[in-house]
Length: 288
Image (cartoon, rainbow, N blue to C red; front, side, top):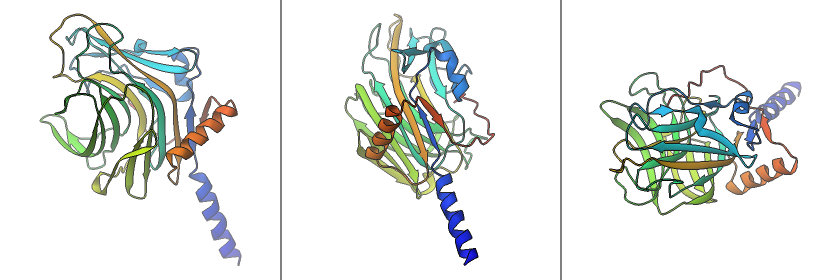
C-alpha cells in the first residue's frame, strides 16, 4: 500500500512539475530591462540574412508601454543593412508555445519589395554541419514572397538538421499563401511525437517522425532580409514586427482556446511576467 501511494505521489508531483510556465506581457520601461527576465537582444554577426549585415540591439524598442517592436532596415547593401533578433534562455522542449504578433505587409518608410522574414521560432545551437541533435521549429512570414513562392506566404517548418555551405536542408515545411498583415495568435504544440502549428485557432500543419525536436531550444523572434531578395533600389527602407505577449506551458499540449484563456487569466491577475521553467545551464548564444 505504501509503495503504491508513494508511486502515485511521484506521478502526481511529476505531472505538476511539467506544468512550468513562461509568460511575458512586455511591460518594460525600455529594452535594457529585458535582460533581467532572461531575454537576449542579438548583437552577434552571422546567419541568417545578409552576409556582413549588423544585428543591432537598438532595433528593439518598447512602445505603448507593453508592446515589443523590432525594426530592421536596409538600402540593399550589407553595409547599411541592420537586422533584429530577440532570444530567451535555452530550456524549452515539450509543451505549448504561443505568441501574439503583428505582421506587416508594407514598410514603415521607403519602397516596398524586399523579401523579408518575420518570425516566431524555437532553436538549438548546431554543433556541426548535419548535426543529428539539432532542433528548430519555425513560424516564418514572408510578405513579399521568396523561397520559390510569389506573394505573401507563411511557412511553418520543422527541422531535422542542415548544412549551411553548400546548402543542405533536412526539414519538412507547410506553406500557406495569403496576407497575414495585422495581429495574429500563433500556437505551437510539441508533444507525443508531433509538432502542430496553429494560426488564430486554425491548425495549419502537423509534422513528426525524424523531424520531432530532440534538444532543448530557446524561444526567438527575428526580422531579417533574404539575401537574394533585395530591391534594385538604394533608398533606405524599414520594416517592423510587433510582439504583444509570449507564452509557454510545459507538459500536455494546450489547445489554442486554452492558451487564450490562460493568457487572459494572467492578465486579469495583473501578472506581467512569470517564469517557472527551471534553468538548464545550457548556453543561449543568440547568434542564429
